[in-house]
Length: 231
Image 1: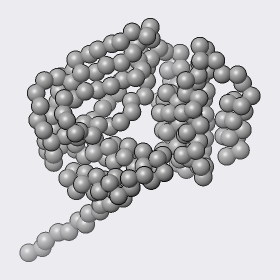
Image 2: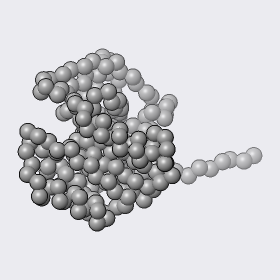
Image 3: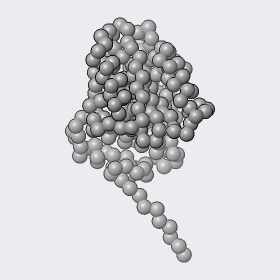
């Protein structure tokens, strides 16, 4: 806990921040804090002049905090289990992967247009994507619209980039893909609710309940009972 905050605040308050030379900051944590939302807001405030990479260690780390820090700081989050001393999930492998990401150019301000009105997409805010990295974006919608998905972003040279991606539609209940996307949408809605000090709480909870029931997923507003009928 002490190491986490000493490293974090020492950097931000004792170094001059120049947006022309963004710094790469690596945050390591093996626990949690009691001011998660405030910490993420501080990261957002300095995101124009820094990129934040987070590394969670062990089973007791606050994963939402580490993901939130990385998303707000336009970096990447990764996690190491306590028993991973070798292989791709070892400390050395994960740290080297994050260092490699920090040296790569990114495509930022990504926007995905699925061509569906009133849809919910996840992640709602797409962090910068590093060269050679894959990213998955889900969209929940009820209207079937033809055409392709349009992806726009800004490249390392500051120029606008546009891609056309073939659309793949999964029917509700036909695939676990829809349930995964619905779960990510719910996470985004609840995270935004916390960051906005519970504004529109009733509306958000109603939407979470609707998504949970439609896609048969457990949320803070929905639960399911498994029963079998004998005879």
